[in-house]
Amino acid sequence: MRRRFVTLDVFTTKRFAGNPLAVVLDPDGLDTAAMQGIAREFNLSETVFVFAPTDGSHRAKLRIFTPGRELPFAGHPTVGTAVLLGRIDGGANARDFVLEEQIGLVRCRVEPTGQDSGRATFDIPRLPEQAGTVADAATLAAALSIAPGDLGFANYTASRWSAGNPFTVVPVRGLEVMARCRPDMARFNAAFGGGDFCAPFVVCGETAESGNTFHARMFAPGVGVTEDPATGSAAAAFAGYLAAHGGYRDGEHVARIEQGYEMGRPSLMELTLRIGGGKLTGASIGGGAVVVTEGMIEA
Image (cartoon, rainbow, N blue to C red; front, side):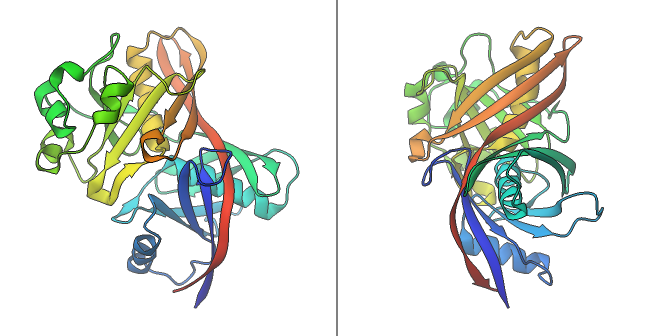
């Protein structure tokens, strides 16, 4: 059966930058194994399958796959699919809708920026929580092929957080250290394990572009993602980390996170934190997306 698909570059305003995403628009009749096979065929960080929603008041139900497994939630698939659905709906103005994902309901706001491009922002569906302890500095550094003295900046130290997918947030001194990070697979699981999702979100306060707040890299080879150009679910987890370590006062705060530069895929995620009573009360993640290809896949 021929099924429509679209690819987009997400967390960017330009084609051939950001994080590529495949969206399959006619998935009815596909079982989980078939969807996993299609995701392996596209071999992008994630592939989304768009189904009719369970609740008719919502826009769509999404299933999200890496080349290696299904995810309950992911950020760049949410942003990219939301922009694509807004384009399909033909709206010329900003609009809100709800997407159903395995993690729960994800509220989105979409604004077209061109015939084949747009911007979407979504409220994270689950507040991040600490997700256990982290390995010692020597173990973390060895797994990234850097030295223990390369870890940390300001008052930031390693910690593990999850808003659906768990990430070990690993602060490093700057861009020079960031460029030297290379996953050592013989040491990787010992440093970042703790379940079926094993991934560090490496961050520093030095940025490649002025006006940005943090520079990041993310590695998840265990689920088929050697390195990711932009990781919205990591940004969602990072919201909890920042609320705990960043010294933010009550109110709304925006952190601009650049990622993908070492891959030649520069990306930008805008993370908005809402702090009340000294705690994180909510967060949203936004970014642009642009259509790159449209076609049919036999499946």
